[in-house]
Image: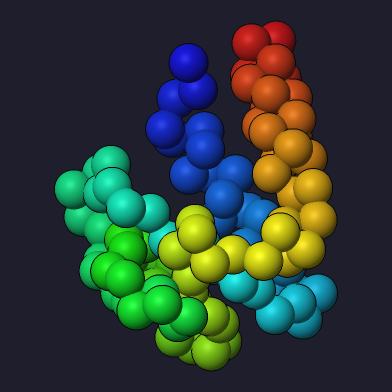
Length: 98
């Protein structure tokens, strides 16, 4: 099982990289607050309440990104990113074991 800390570390690093590249992101909110400190926001398309991490909400406000629920995300916005991110996280775990 992937430790939450590894996922959180990767997510922050990835968001910083995308900000540096000037990318405009679409954030996918969650229906479950896994950590207990998630912030509730509305999906920008359908209005359903979703949770996002506090640090991600700050970036979302600052850079005026859209937040959507998992049902409203455009599959083209993902562009295989989830698979690539999982592979990178696995690599990080392997490096930590060395």
